Image (cartoon, rainbow, N blue to C red; front, side, top):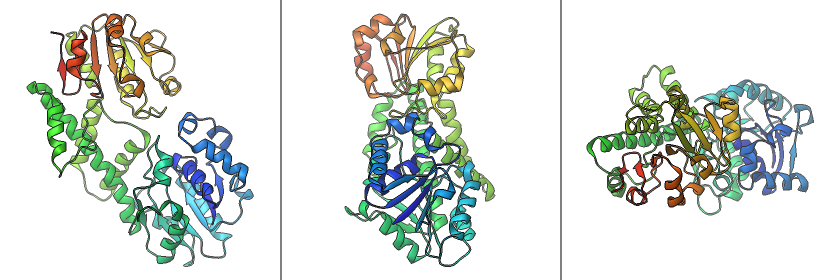
Length: 429
């Protein structure tokens, strides 16, 4: 099939790579805000497994053509939109341009992070009953995008016409052989379902963080509680790990979109407000534990931080807990030494040079030399099994603050360190 993909999001790059890989003739028009010559240099694309290699291979094989403007585009059968909410105007103009030059049978696939109802509105712009609009909400996760696209567990397919459904099924047939992955529903239902899923996941995380706070107060190890809750088949273990807050561009954006949908419909959600409030407060939890341990005596101290990215496997820091944490530490005159294997350029761009309060280390142990405490913020795999004897010798006050509960408290305490996790703690005997 002849496919035109528009956008510079992860979903656009993944669709371009995967659809051209299985033989579709793909044209990819990145958004003007991030043209290809800039997009190919961004860290997240270079780090995403398989994507850049497959894009280059498909370009070489001739199944993928990367375009710089609308004039160089041939008429497609499928127009695939992967845009951010701020780029809705670009979607309008392109849809109208392509539809005007198409004789009929065009399928518009809205894979963008747009508000509920946008697929219907975009469909109305094509102006003919022989064109079809389909909602295919973005379900990809950064760091796993290729696998999730090519071996999906499911697609939410928002479709009101049989012909549109048939075209999308053919488009994605190569990725639908193991089992039926399409869950068809009306277009608005698919768009709302995507938001509702992320709202539920965020609610689970925030609820578990509330339980962890209660466990701290009562002197209970929250790991026992988590294991007990997860063993209940009605609950399960997914997204039941307490931590120092979630972030990321898509997850946070979806929650705000869900809140906007609630507000615009005249329904105020106290629950969603609480979920968001709990998460923002949780981003300061490591600071509060540091404050409590040193009884507020923080001015002039030095803290090492391991991890800045909002999750392992990415260089992005949008809404990441480290941003809130840094502000709280700097307000108390705390100097920070930070290590992250990928996110330092993004952090520098966000906070600028802070030679007096922030230095970066190329080695995680170098960040700990002479520091009063170590904060684990992002659970990169290289942090999971440190040299404990070396670490104990580097930290002046032997304090480890584990924001992701990846360490065993009793083992850490046995190595001579004070351990403070989320709902967990232990001290050297």
